Length: 290
Length: 166
Image 1 (cartoon, helix red, strand yellow):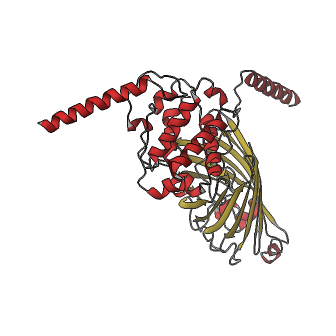
Image 2 (cartoon, rainbow over the protein chains, first blue to last red):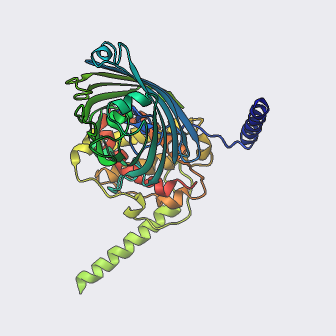
Image 3 (cartoon, rainbow over the protein chains, first blue to last red):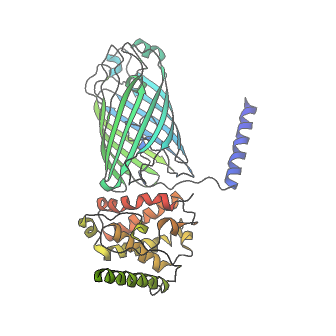
């Protein structure tokens, strides 16, 4: 095992050295905010929703990446997410995110115990298949990407106890993003095939069925090169018998401090979650990248 | 019949005039090989909305923006090498003409075609975006509101397909 580690490290070092010598690693070059911000499930998006743009500041010759920390504080719950994403040639995006859904005092009322926390790992892959969100202003064709998110919930027994069929699941999606420079708008629409309950935090599937198509819509108005304000809406399935699941929405502002740092703040309405009504509150996300 | 003759004479005169203009470069500019002048060379159709042109402070404003854009770009470590052999006064003049034409200011664009003029320059998307940033800087300096800046950027953005080669 140790030997394998050394071999892998040596191979990686050789690979990096040879790439560096060939001068192949290029970073940077995108216009500010044109790669969106980190989505809750990792990768590039608008916050609650996943977009067609590719993470990182790289263009079609380069490599980019970003890490993010996101904190959501609604009436009866807290959600923390930490993760990173790598973008390759503005074409392929790989992401990994850890989500912690902290029930706090609500946990005791749910019979789970105070501070009970659902945890989930989301591994994502996204490929841009056509178009360019920014350049093709003479056409209505958006940038279109397809992607998958593999989600693994750590609370196997609990999510089954609430009625989910599985503690693991894969979401498949098609996303379309368009920047309209003439109107200072950025628009996104995403169709997601999913069986995830509360994005997977309450497991996958249930008595009301499995995979269903869901829609995510975002609209942002660019106030400057650095600042975009907008709204998002995300439909959700309602697979579990014990509690109705609601659609999500938010009003957001994203500010690019510079090319490497951006802050997103939002007011979110997550509806009812696990029988607790009207989960509204704040969403804060910090993103650093290259 | 007589009308036709007048038109023909006028056309001949105009053609001779434009050929002459290409042979003798404007003051401060180097001569260029003859090429066909056409509004199509500007690679965008003019805007119909006069308010936008006014928000750029007319032709004078666009001349300042073009000058600032070029001055900043030829000093920009990211892209200055691309301009190593560029005829700077000519670039400033033709850029201002192009901006003025596409914003509906009624200017004549006398420069070359976008694909031809960028041929073999090896411009990348990163270079293109660097120039866009410099243009945004120049428009900010001129005091053009951000929402109006987007009208010019929307006209120029599709040129990426003709400018970027690799």
